[in-house]
Image (cartoon, rainbow, N blue to C red; front, side):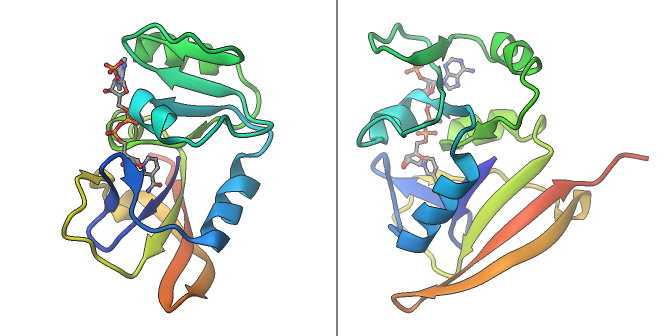
Length: 158
Ligand SMILES: NC(=O)c1ccc[n+]([C@@H]2O[C@H](COP(=O)([O-])OP(=O)(O)OC[C@H]3O[C@@H](n4cnc5c(N)ncnc54)[C@H](OP(=O)(O)O)[C@@H]3O)[C@@H](O)[C@H]2O)c1
């Protein structure tokens, strides 16, 4: 999973991102390019255009009339479909998708932003840090906003 979150796990508001950070967009690009990307319908509609060189996989109850995307109506069918992918599949949001996929994820790339937004209306799900190995990949300051790229890898269960 890959997400950018505020201090209170803020993810977005009004079906848009809260923070628009150039370096973070580059981080997102580098970590998703060439990989299938799973998203919910709202996130799909929030994109300005299809993202280059990434197979879009949309989870929705509706039919979508769009070329070159895969559409699934059932999370379990989607999970069995991606089991056959040898390479990494990235879950890119939004909130409802992260909540449903977190139990299946073995890696999370979180951009942890040192800011709050009281108007946020969607949040990343709670997770127990003790169940994950945490590595800070990079500390960034962009336009006086501090944020870290953090990798969480799920600890193997005993
Ligand atoms: N900060 C970040 O890194 C980040 C990343 C991505 C998105 N976001 C933000 O997150 C917000 C969007 O999140 P969201 O939770 O509102 O929407 P979402 O997760 O993108 O999409 C939700 C929609 O996906 C469909 N869906 C979800 N689970 C499904 C299932 N099991 N089966 C079939 N369809 C399913 C439903 O669509 P239908 O039932 O209508 O078909 C549902 O209304 C926006 O503000 C966006 O900017 C932030």
